[in-house]
Structure formats: C-alpha cells, structure tokens
Length: 328
Image 1 (tube, rainbow, N blue to C red):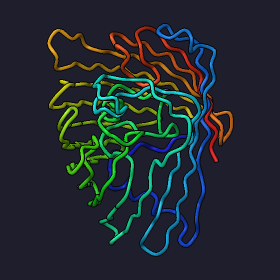
Image 2 (cartoon, rainbow, N blue to C red):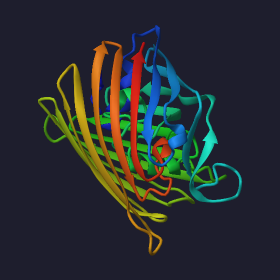
Image 3 (tube, rainbow, N blue to C red):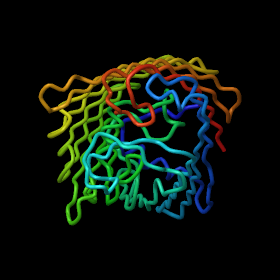
C-alpha cells in the first residue's frame, strides 16, 4: 500500500507538518472500511462491515504550524481499561465500549524555533513505540500487542497524549522531551516522556523511549529498531513496565514491491501476576494498491491466550479480516 516511511527519529516525525505550504490550509484524510471474514472467538461478529475515517487540517504561517486531526467511527471496538477508563470502578484487561461518533485525535501548535528545535503543545500522537496510530502508516490491518499496551496506558483514545514537548534534530541524533498530563488520567499528576533516536547509517533507525505515570502499569520503557533496504523492512521491539505487564517483545518483516506488499509479525507478552501464561499473536498480511488513493488489505491473525486482550482482535483463535483504505 502507499506508505510513509515510518521514521523512528521522533523529532523529524513531529516536525513533518511543517512541510505544509506556508499560508495555506491543507485538508487530507482517509476512509477505512473493515469486513470481518471469520473470527473463532466471536462468530457473531463474522460477515460484518465497520467503518471509520479521519480528516486532518494543517496550516502553516511563518514558523508556526497548527494541526487538527478528527477521527470518526462507526460501530464498536474494545480497548483495555486498566485505569478505569470505563468509569465503573473495575480494573480489567479490556471491555467493549461504544465508540460510535467522533473525537479529536490531535490538536496542537508547533513552533519551529530554528532548523534544529521545535516546541509542540496540545494533544498529539504518542511518540513512544514502533507502530503508528493511523492505518495509512501501518504494515497490516491490526495493531500489535505492544501498541495495545501503550494504548491501554493512555487515557486519551488512540494512544494519544496531552502536554508540551520539545524536539531536537541533530543529524544522526534526535531527541524529544515531553511534560504531559499523567498519561493514565490521574488528576493533579504529570508524566515525563523522553525519546532518543539514532540513525547511524541510512536505513537503520534505533529508538529508546521512556514515560512515567502514577498508576496503571507504572513507568514504561520501549526500545525498537528498524532497518529498510531495497523494499524490505525488518523491525524488532522490546517493552518493559513496572507493573501488570512484565515485558513484551516482537519482530516484524515487510516486503513492498511497489504495487503491494506482504507482512509477517510475531509478538509475545508476559504478565507480572504469578501463574499467568504468556500471550502471543502471529499475523500474516498482504496489501495491494488498486490506485494511488485506494488500497486493499487481507490479514490472518492468530491469538493465543489473549483472554480478550488485543483491541478489536480480542479472543483466542484465528481472525481473518479484509480492509479497504481510501485516502484524500
């Protein structure tokens, strides 16, 4: 599918909106349609369509860029509720909640102080972790277990955070420091996020991220590495948390041949609680670019000992789904 290179240099990623034409407001986005072909854990969801989308507004004047991303959704999805996101007073790994409607994904202002430093304030995508939030930046249909862990720790939907961040780009080195609302939504508390990126040679990206929080899984550390060469992308990621999740790690490989591509991903995670078996997820996916603004994906995913973990792909067994992505 048509993809942006997922750069692990976070400073560059956050500065990307500054490329919009000065003085003009650009509008872009996508429509995302799913069809659940089969689901061993939830047969009632089979042969069902769902849809969501996004509209992004970006305007640059001088050294300041303002961006607003709006998510729109149809139907239901599931997500983790470790921090009582459902407000029922019960901590549990996940719970189905109605997500029909719209919400703000990102709303921020970015001031480019100079070619090296940018200050960002507002609500924006979590810079920690390998996988990105939007489907146009993914190599397969579903997010992986590690992304789900990070999403489960952020009280805002879609693994987003709110606060101030300063990014620096120093050639092969990059760095981001963020002072945030507590990512789990604990009142009168704040989180500190630090992301360091290194690109020692062309195509090789290394990233180390850390974020603190008062509750939930506690402080989280994530390290990921990505290498791109001649249409091939390989990546590995490791995450460790203070509580609930002991650790998680995974590998991903993708080959993009221009008109399409194939992806394989394997992940596992272990919980801190004694006697709890590890959770694993294996994913195979392929995509084909029907046109410049239209892609079709097919994914098979096997969940083992998920106990409902893993967003819309919760439950043990095989899940097969089709996705259609149209961009504008």
